[in-house]
Length: 320
Image 1 (tube, rainbow, N blue to C red):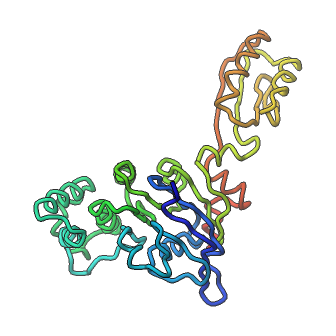
Image 2 (cartoon, one colour):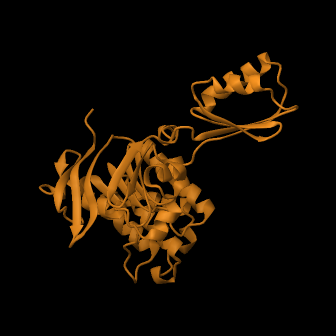
């Protein structure tokens, strides 16, 4: 099956500044693709080009087979977009905004009433449905923007920073609703600078920095790509012998073994979930008594640092 979105050398320049630099990427139908990077990485500019809001300087993208340059109207028919900054009429209420959007999407009166209520209740906005938009917090306005996509159930949804300014409980609700939207047949592009959001929600993550796409794969494969990124710390009842250390060092997945205390070893390795059972079996054969074992794997922040030399927080402070 061909990709539902194909991006070819997509580039956007503002004067001498290149916001997106020859981006090449394919998005498969039915997946959630996360674009992870700091503010200024080019995520928003990319999705605005895909949504035909701004025109590329070079290259193009095909959305549902339609060229964003040549067939913008056809592209827009397939899309639902939740912008980073909510696009709400200043005098509107949440009910007015979402109900109007449901009308535009062609829902019948009965279906519209039901769906608007369901979505606003799910987003904890029902009690605020008749409040003026200007009286709402930034997080509540963001919920209304997300509601438009959830009402529409488009072929392709583009969501930019979907949980910005939203509390932890609200974040989890929105993540669940976006996953349900995807499960019902919507392909989703998610732009975010939140590591955990990208990790838990995305089928694949594309890491962007300074307008370039550095790498794109599943979160687990990205973490596994860091050589020796997994850490296992083993505490023994008694100081481990040189023979035990040598045995551990023989595993091809183990990059380095260091002694942190007299009775504690730290192993840097790959594919921790596959190797640890083998390590424990070896230790049992050697007669070693283990009092505790702790495992950790790289985070997406470690992946970002691996490819850029900066943590996401450092890159964010750098402004690009």
